[in-house]
Length: 416
Image 1: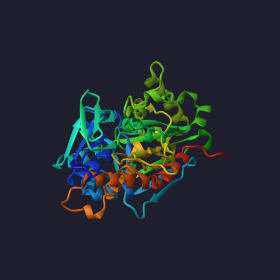
Image 2: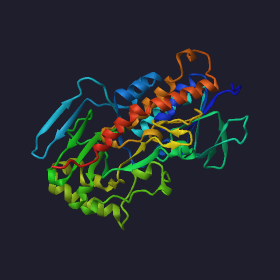
Image 3: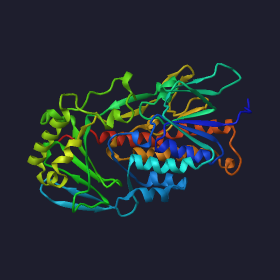
Image 4: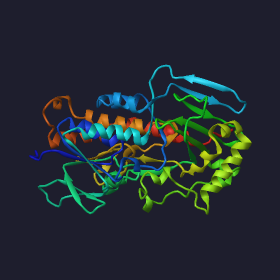
């Protein structure tokens, strides 16, 4: 049956992928609303952390005409500088692909500014999605999106770009039953240094590798705010030597998404005077193992330290249904009305730095799933939009899952 409804999209989640999807679908003539839980752009995390866009992410931004704005907001990443335990320094220049470094909030602000100028795009903040339902009317397949403020909005289609603990995904058993949260034996300690230390390159990522028996390494990346984002990458084996680094307990299923980005990026140790004790212990550790590093960043920076939870990712696997066994993962519902992108579909561990790149790429690939005959001034029909969601849902997993698996493997300490 051909619907006479005018297509409309609600996107749950105003992160980079959700905003890019809104820009691109809006330009195809589809009324698109972005719903974001955070009331202000800087509420995703109380701590800035670095993301780096490479070929995938920058190509997606170029599709939306957002690359030049991104270049103005971001920082070139031209090299990797490796310091080893013997004091050797190796500089590895990036010979081919361009890379841009951001804080997440700056990238979001860049995309939100562009999206807000699109006549078909509405951004609504301060009301996140709690669930999605279908109207109980055989002749009306409109979706109802229920929000945290008690209101309900309607649309013909929904894109779940609402993160690892997606409320959209959990609302539909055919999506939810495919997903398993996998936790890896690795975690990080995050520190923000107020400025890039003197003598350090602002266009490179620095990797510091102490002796093997320390069982951790450090990644330091300048961000456009002028700060230095530091991640001390640890493994469960690290706790054998430094038990005081134990991360917060893994989240149980009932708590998924309760704290938004704070679920991982602002986690704190659960003991009295945690901040002071952690800073003192890190100072002792770095003084013994990495004295030059400690001198460069300054002991005061350690007051910002947070121990994050163990890294986790979303593994999507085919499940058996009443229609027979499915042999492929599908990011879309069978009717093509709901689709997942970004972390809701393919959350990835941070090892390879591909999370934001994959989210942006998924947004662009989803819009590209509309056939070329729908280009131009003709707004796609409801049926054409559903077909695009289905095509993306079936094809995208084969590209995303191998990257997820490689990244997850990097969070397991290599055995000697």
